[in-house]
Image: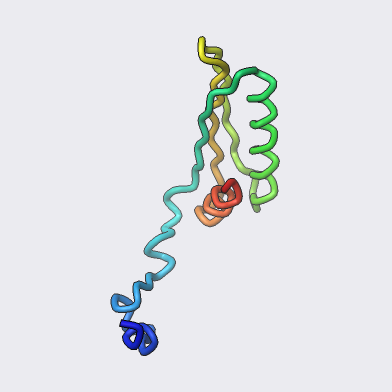
Length: 98
């Protein structure tokens, strides 16, 4: 199997598990979402500020940030979405959160 991988050329895409970037990133998924329950409103607001700052570091055009804080018996739920101008920025943002 190693020999097959070492001999792989661009025309042997299926054999070496390579894909064209356009196959994976077709610019249709430009929104990243985040949802989490916090024990306090201040914790949720701090996380929103942190996520927003990370999005601003990635954006080339302004990222559209929508958020909602909802009080529940379990705590404060932060739901937010980050819509970037292209899928590459969305992916960079998501990978930066790991």
